[in-house]
Length: 304
Image (cartoon, rainbow, N blue to C red):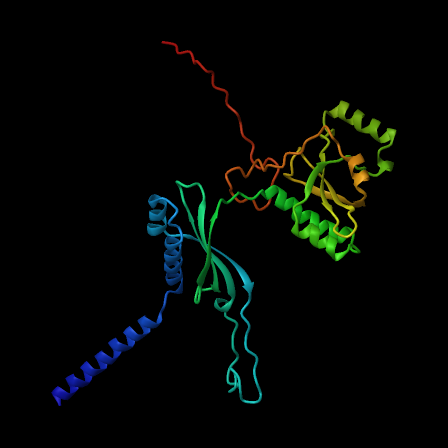
């Protein structure tokens, strides 16, 4: 009896160990496998690079960039007893891991000045991911002020001119605008009477406040693919750049009419002064932090 009891315990222990090993083997790390496939593909196709750059790919982890191609679908029930849910005993839940993704592995080479990007597609958890091609790419930091102005302009235009042709809307949505300094009439002429102006100046003389700096007028312009007209969203910003730009009016004008309203002597700074190093600015702000500049003399004098 004692021997049989020990034998049963050993058998139970062996089965438990085998079961744990089986479960461990089933837990496949799809991401690690995809990284190794991307690394092997990169090393195979980058023999034109120096060995220093190839060692960076060989011994460093890549960045992962992904975007959704299409979402995974839940199979529908079938009352005829066929298909994936033929028993109708439970609801199949949506699993985001089944979304089909465009995924790239990126190594930012410090010596070469560009990045090696291995492109491919697979599920969200990288199951089934395979490399398609390799790209040498130099990433340019996003001009977030221009991007924010672009998004605002598209939303404003669709609401301001709802009858706009779909081709024009798509041109505005998916192409970069031309940025011009303009002089369109944005204020109501009735509010610009002599009495209003005198009242404003007298208030400034008495209190020293109330006379704000006139904002810069900047327009985002596209060319219509339908008739060649200019699609214009005109707005204002605190300075001669797109930080804090706000749309005010939208126009559909002929090229000559736009040229007549363009201020030739002004220049709009397109470069994002807050994003020179590539940091992400979701909502551009005007002077979010006040700084105090301390001037230090070139040759300080010491007393002693």
